[in-house]
Amino acid sequence: MVLSGTLISVLILAIAIGLSLGLLGGGGSILTVPLLTYVAGMDPKEAIAASLFVVGVTSVVSTLPHARLGNVQWRTGLIFGAASMVGAFLGGLAGGRIPGVVLMIAFALMMIATAGAMLRGRKKTASTGEKKHLPLGKILAEGLVVGLVTGLVGAGGGFLVVPALALLGGLAMPVAVGTSLLVISMKSFAGLAGYLTSVSLDWPLILAVTGMAVIGALIGARLTRVVPEQALRKGFGVFVLVMGFVVLAQELPALLG
Figure 1 (cartoon, rainbow, N blue to C red):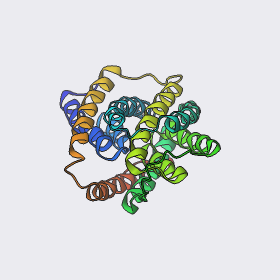
Figure 2 (figure 1 turned 120 degrees about the horizontal axis):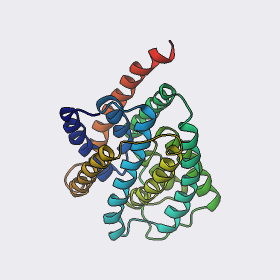
Figure 3 (figure 1 turned 90 degrees about the horizontal axis):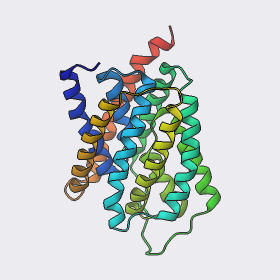
Figure 4 (figure 1 turned 60 degrees about the horizontal axis):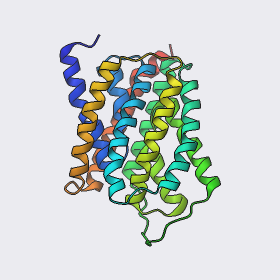
């Protein structure tokens, strides 16, 4: 049972999860898994499964304002998302049967890779005003791989999906971000379904965290007009990089005996 003081800390920090998704279109799981593991005291497998639910719901909420602005390419998002759901479900099935310490080390490596992508920045693509017809085979392959990673370690959302969408068909960044949120929501719930075959969750706590994350996402959506994305991304990238090494330092001694 989470103590009241710890619960308050968890709920306050959950706002940062939503802020990340609202401002950057990704990064929610990078914060959620360490928060639930090291602050809330969850088992790593439970934390990963809970992260998939929190990020999935928050992504659905974040998709709505992007859709109103026309920044969601539904055909690409639904095809990519469907492939990701298959990969995420398979990853969730596998993740529920892998030792927690191995999953956390894999998660830490994903954090470090994500931080590197954030610090390098995204390649900007010019918007031509034309709808891009993305190759179906590439959409399915990319979606399957990204979904598998997400389902396995509960990470690899927007910062894998956005570059994939941008590079596959040259989507403009606002469209890639909006479409990625649709994909993240789809594959997060599929990964959760895979985990629920072997993991049980503390739903009252998870729903409370999700509610705070949704509030953060709504705030983040409003702040996009005020906060420079590049400065925010680089600062957040440094934080994620440090956190990745902290998780490695926590987990490697246990793995090495």
